[in-house]
Image 1: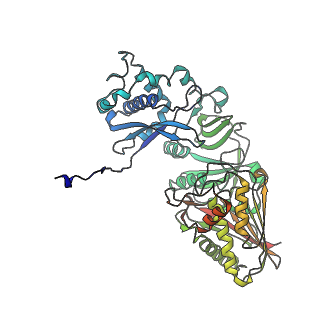
Image 2: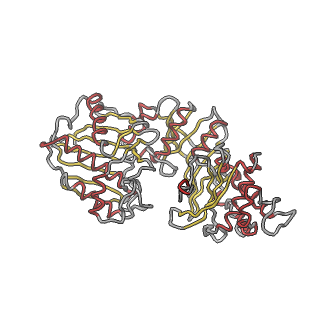
Image 3: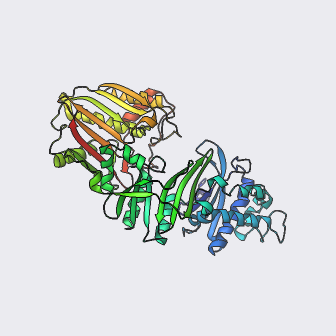
Length: 517
């Protein structure tokens, strides 16, 4: 019978469920990185959540594991997850501070003061085989009275007065939840240098898209400073967003704080607000309810944003569109050609008007993905021209300083010089290239591709989100990029990229303008 025994074999299964992940900074501000301390907290947190939701603790499970944070530090994450994907664990964020306090109470075991763990505190039937790993005193070494004082907002962070609180949900989730409570209220999305978002921000457009589907009244509010600085082309990019339940206004006055950027206001007589607070190492999403000056909002109509002459057109790209790195350039140039022919009656590229100079400006073009899309866009333009291609001069203006975690194609290079060399090597095949590193603060928000023709005309293509409106699936098997390799290795990888792409939720807008230089 030995032949019937198959070894070594392991049976496994995979399922999807709701998960809560918690990473804790200790009193000394170091990250918790000790499983003997983390596991008792995980059990107490699970039991506290079950009690708050009125369910059996066994409906939830918990564990701990080592994780690497974005800054490279190692910590121990606490995981609480549903057994049956009922949505219990994902609801914990709203009550996190109270749940942690309840967890400490369980760890204290006040009425029985057990030695390590008992059924009156954190030992339950489903954990009977892990009892040796449970020591409530280890958890209490982290959840100390002093540690809980760190959860309280400092006075300077109470930007909305006494009602100011830390928002434990994601901004989008919290706003959508509040919109159900205040269905008749106006939801104001704030845009500007002192607000959380600028026009074209992907997160803002995604939230706008969802709110529009719910048919609530949305108002895009531009700080006057931002609106006054806009070129006609930048104003045009906003025009397609304003229709149906979406209006627009210019804001003067109102909320102002040196360390906070306002994101959303729900106005139903009271002002329910969300803002990001940043001071030194603190980065908090805060919410609050207040009465007071909402500022003066001057309405803007769609016609106020459109160009007065007939030399402009707008291309809207749907959030459900798909392409690939390989097919991106013909896919996009086809859309632009259709708009030029239909809306302006002429396409200088189709007639192969000689191009003398090309300028590209995008302060967020910092990743291999956006660089290869720029290369594909321009190399396909050369293909369209064929023998009529005149090897124009390229001026590429990019941010002079970049930073970020780097390992995958959508991550930034760690140094701008490496990105610049890759751009230079790629575009040298098409003509004379000059990469111009520029202070990000001095660059226009609008991202543009400018083609100057020999006959004195020019075509400007304004990309609302730059080339970042396309994303690669996070589970794509060929998502890694050789950031630590030589420039030659990086160039080979860039030229061979062919990943499938999706347009970001909410889609994007491209503005076209033909004029005389």
